[in-house]
Length: 295
Image 1 (cartoon, rainbow, N blue to C red):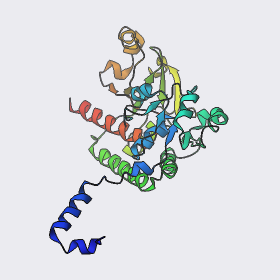
Image 2: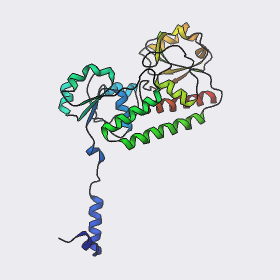
Image 3: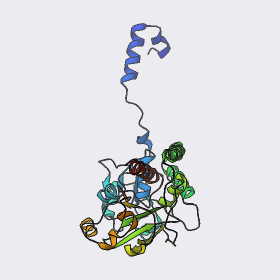
Image 4: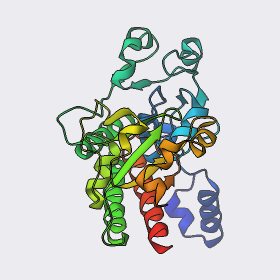
């Protein structure tokens, strides 16, 4: 059989060889990647951002409602409820690894019968949230062989937030970031949370200085916000019917930012997320503040 060197000495044969190489299927790095399933949306968004699409995720529709982006591929299998996944379906997929957060640690004995389980924490009291997000990104990346992608994700996210900080109009007032649980109660986000970590990197002040829980928020009635002078930032989605109830609420209308028309509303951003959600929140917030100050 002629060797490649011999073929290269014949222009016609060399041309045919080049065409065959061009038409040959490219190596797909995903083909060598482990098949990973996760119940946790923070891990799921990180996998997608690393270019390692998970094989299966719990509550796919709710992921797209609450997390938004990065989007899951259409063929990602929905495992059902995060707290009660369909274990038979999961077993049929034969994943190489299952990634969970401590919230789902009680499922570890059952999940470990299907595949090795890794528990990856993010929000830990007493630690720097941004550094925790960097650490989680690297830990997820090691499980799927995407260490270089992790460093790129960290670098590009931090570069983008630095650019967004430069875009912010000067003299921004303190912000009060809330998400409605019903028409009378909100989560108010402060220390130890993703939103606070982003505010810090953007150089913005948070008006909520009261204690927060493990996840970086306080659950309060909207009457607790009445005396706080700040620009209100409402993160969607709103509970069904809440918008109509708020329109007729004298208490809601009494909030300073509602009364003076400076309130802004942001699309859904996963408040318990990692770097992808942090960038998404920063993009949405800066864009909204630019628009508000440009009116």
